[in-house]
Amino acid sequence: MPQVYLPFEKPIQELELRLKAITEAGEKQKADVSGEVERLKSQIAETRIQIFSELTPWQRVQVARHSQRPFTRDYLALMTTDFVELHGDRIHRDDRAIIGGFATIGGQRVMIIGTQKGRDTKSNIETNFGCAYPEGYRKALRLMKLADKFQTPILTLIDTPGAYPGIESEERHIAEAIAVNLREMFTFSVPMIVTIIGEGGSGGALGIGIGDRVLVLENAYYSVISPEGCAAILWKNRAFADRAAEALKISAKDLIEFGFADEMIPEPLGGAHNDHKQSAENVKEAILRHLKEVSRMTPEKRLEKRYDKFRAMGRFTEIETVAAK
Image 1 (cartoon, helix red, strand yellow):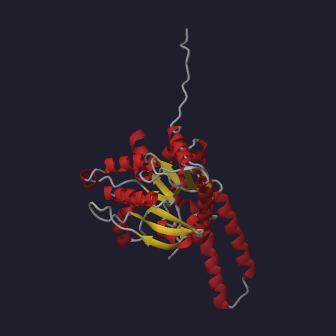
Image 2 (cartoon, rainbow, N blue to C red):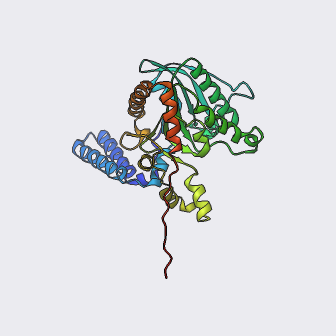
Image 3 (cartoon, rainbow, N blue to C red):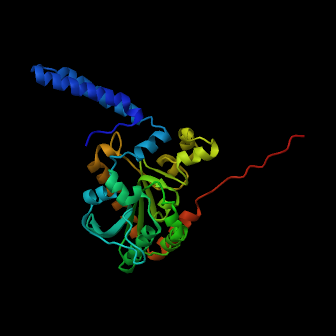
């Protein structure tokens, strides 16, 4: 698959095109261009480091949405074995925007549930562009109840712009489905680890986002509204999405600072889409480490700390002003 470059990666693209042209010219003319090739490779590496060390919140949103970024099925293939997918909500149908089943990770049997996007027109239609219907959340709840019954830890992977907002969702009660998930996820006694691997959009993400630990990839984001949606409300123009992303404080570092996430998982240089295998190894290591820590707690302590964790979110400070005389 051809490399897809984001707008701010244009300097890297130009250097890589020059490298390709020089390499092909050297092969065609049977000339030694190794010196120029090494110089360009070094320049590409330096440019990539410089660009990705200074990303703005809006640029990180663009990385989180990259079409070649690893999705839930990629992580399942790279960091688990013996995955057995389970289908359907036993009420309406099987929603392909949320997938899940039993798997083994690091020798530990777990239930993994995640939102899934597509890479082409066919798969995007199949997964509804990662936007789940009510039946997707009811399927997730069914699998979580099954895991709790068999005392199996639950892992969730989040990558969705949000739950599907169409009339079909309203007819089948999307708000109720998400609300029930939120309530029930506070009652499961098994360890629960949440990982935001890409987009974490609004209630669509929160519907499988309650856990003992919340991990977030370096270039992922978690927000009550998309930057475009926020810009449309505040500035009446989606073109101000970059300003909205800055104001929303949705990047990994901000999430940790405000207590919405517990750890930022580093990504390979240039983003997770540049090295799926390394990204999966980083996610696996973090999940297993936190799973080990949470598993040491008694079920009662886990439930208490999980409740306290989410009750502490949304803090604010009141400042008393003195009127001028």
